[in-house]
Length: 114
Length: 109
View 1: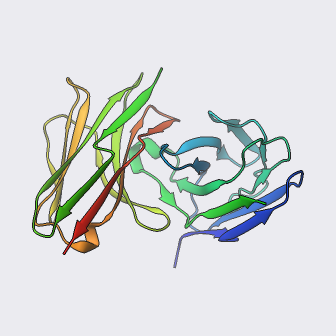
View 2: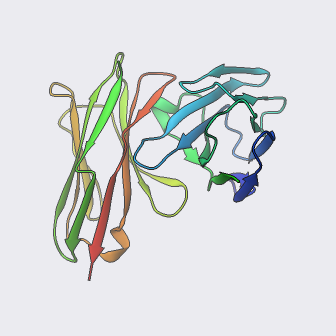
């Protein structure tokens, strides 16, 4: 079945550590996105990528980094520079123009800093 | 500043009730508005609206967009406990989506 797989589902990180969240899709979608969700706030865009080897910052990119070496994969690294990383992270993909087709979301990764 | 506002923030109803969820938006270069249902994990797609006044329906759910007044509503009739979820709306401006904070709906038996 086609879809988006995020791993791990739960992740604990010590302060000062970098962690990488995995996002893989087999939908042959061109565009991929990372969102962060906090209680009482809507989804906020961290980074997005419309084609391989290219990505753009979203609204809250500081403290995060991404890569897009393959069409299927868009990993997100939460660096030690991210001051408040505890959140629910959602990866999404779309057939090119998400405005016309909408997103397909992964099941999310809940990151907790301990 | 581009923004999307949903109301109410939370809602508790009894099974069988009808509910209306609101989404207003102020974004530049508006292209479409999407509704998602989020239970425990990933949001699932409900509707995409691009034209004013055309109702979209899926079973007990329906939605309509008013591009003049910049809002959309999501109606759920004859609610069931399985409708309990957070309902998100998002306005698309091309490359960007702006999400509201969501409306948390709880349906009690």
